Image (cartoon, rainbow, N blue to C red; front, top):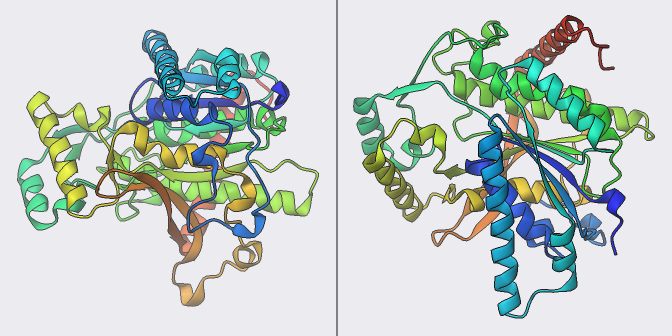
Length: 418
């Protein structure tokens, strides 16, 4: 029997729909297995030097749905329990249900805590509830996000589809976005919901993460996108208030911040092996039908979107998983695979910056959900490159986030988190 004090306690933001809901579904299916498929080091990017390391089966899980709407979260919780029960019933019929799965279902807890990433006060309250209720947190999955898409530029859409169908339905350049939207905290709306709100949540729960002794944690997953793009990024407009491409720029910031936070954690652990290492990973779920795109489309256009996705897959795109459950494969793999199999940051290279002649150098990886033409899902990795200028800009961005975080701590009358 596994030790309940090491069972995962996983927070998923935006868990009631889309890829977030798919991540929750997939976690339940995988952890109900003694040796989850998604925990296996079966991909080309894995470090096989740790081949003797095995996934430590756990007979329980606390899954925390971090959602803005309690009503929608309660509906999602009911659906998740039913989803797992149906899955276990199917396993029973075919004779693969075992005592581990039965114990896992008995010990499964799905809790709801509300959070609004557009309100720093709400994030503080969420962190208070979580840190007081749970002895530790093993995983933070930063899935929630939004885009201020206002309409589709149909002439640009037709042109992009005609010139490059696959790219048009992978990283569309025809969504028109609102500019200048702010939160009640007077911060850039997209920036706060996608970037800063999650940074605040990590900082508030950092000590709770450090208490985790779970073999698969502690780790933080940041959700990127194929639309991540530095082309339109202005570091002077770091809250993305003036940007007409705030969604793409926020995902670019996530790529860079996750890389730097992971680097800092590994460097600190290298200098002091007694300090806990909280790893940060960048995950790219591929393309699935989610509310962000569907909100601009009517019923017929939504059907057309899914048909376009299937056509892209037939044309050879590995990134059109379409199903949120399948798109979740990279996130769940990064939740479960033992650390030893994952590429480590080369501290020697990063300490000298590794920028040859000022050109971008390889700095890290994103873990990408992909599939074949028949929809069989798996995980690949794509390299992240960083120039010296980007390194400086990202360090400055994190410093600004930290300063702003401390300002909110003072405004809330709270001690600043070390």
